[in-house]
Length: 326
Ligand code: FO1
Image (cartoon, rainbow, N blue to C red):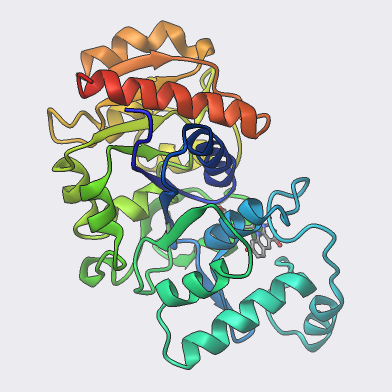
């Protein structure tokens, strides 16, 4: 199969780097644009505007206007409005809203207030730049992640992440309202029509976790006719970016490629994976992955640029074709 239909489940920074590779690998094959399902668990209301950090990371990266140094926001952004917000004591003193980025939040908030859904807002945002993928939110419902701390109190994920740098020990992560949420229009349909579903090397707990927690998405993966292939966000037993190790510890999962693969589980059991891509540094745990009935594939996993990410996608597609017996 040279032109597969691909769906990607993705979080922010890791998801963006991976999606650049998906776009590159599919363009090389003349394949249709991938459908990318973005985590919206990181979303928040701040100073009266709606932020969708993972959606924006994907949009900015695919449009080539992202700040690659910082990992979030727009390149070359300024912070004049942010300084004024701080002077008013509005917003959060530890959270920066760039001027160009605020333009995005204002546009989005206006459209939401006019009654458009997040799916429609993203569709509209996607018209400004040719993203080369079909970007969907996981759900149109607001299911912002709350971090439950050991003392029983809860704070918004973004406060825990950016203010406390994940230093407050989490007891659990919750997405209030997610049990009543529905997958955004087109998500389940895209999974059902896909030859391959790729799980990006994003945070398994607070990026991929919320996507899988939207009722209907996990079932759609389990019954998908195509193959489901995940990419380890752990290389050499360490997290590549972010503070995923703290998140994993909170749900009792070791920070290792094999443990995260086992956490997702095999589709032949009660999980979601057919194959799991491991870094060469973790080749020693391939047998452990196979013991969980998941096909291990060892390949370089450093996403240094879109070509390197594209090579990872090539390996994932090859694994998918093997898993499907093509
Ligand atoms: N991350 C930070 O560490 N500090 C910030 O001030 C900050 C602001 C910010 C504004 C908009 C946005 O879309 C993302 C922003 N991020 C910031 C990144 C974000 O908090 C997280 O990295 C992701 O949500 C985790 O995936």
